[in-house]
Length: 258
Image 1 (cartoon, rainbow, N blue to C red):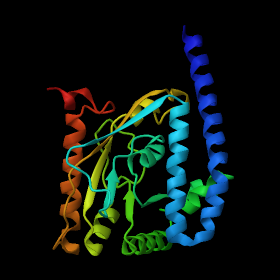
Image 2: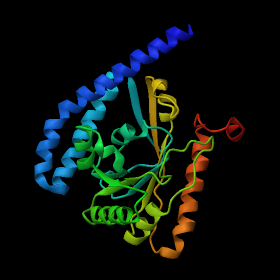
Image 3: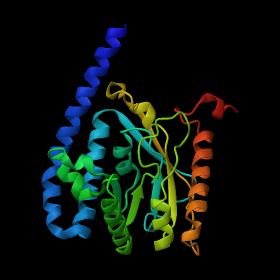
């Protein structure tokens, strides 16, 4: 049975990879066209193409996504979205969750992948965390995006949470930008990406349910740079408690009892 299970996982992984590539090449011509229309209208168009890509791929591989809203969500309003980061599968969940103009902060390394990297560079604000100069440039780009009336998305943990805790420590960036631009923060929980794809093995990839939970927005009105840490801790505690309440699968069972 062990070898049967491994064989099935291999078949599913390569099937999912092939479907990913096919969906990518279906949207690639439209991304190329969109890239000719500038960073704002072109970028918005490319993001919608990525949403279509995500729809096609997830449907083909048997993953069914649902968005849940603890309070009504106004898609016409501008936010800084923040979410937990527990799996490589978090990336496609973003385009299934956010159906409004948004720019995502992502690692610059992914932009080097052939074909995919072209789409990635056009749809994502890239950051090289090892470079102070590059981090500063990314912050400037994100602020300019907000000034254009477009929302942004940031993983405040920066990298994958490979602990058994709900979250790992947050970086300041998202919260500093929120205060400096007076943009409200909207936390999102990705509840099932860990079940769909464990960070320890690509062969753990499997079909099933995917859920995003939109929490209430957090106002930053009147806050100053002195409030960055308190804001960061406030949102950390809200997201941590909600992940425990929803019994996120990666959390140690002792934390979710009751």
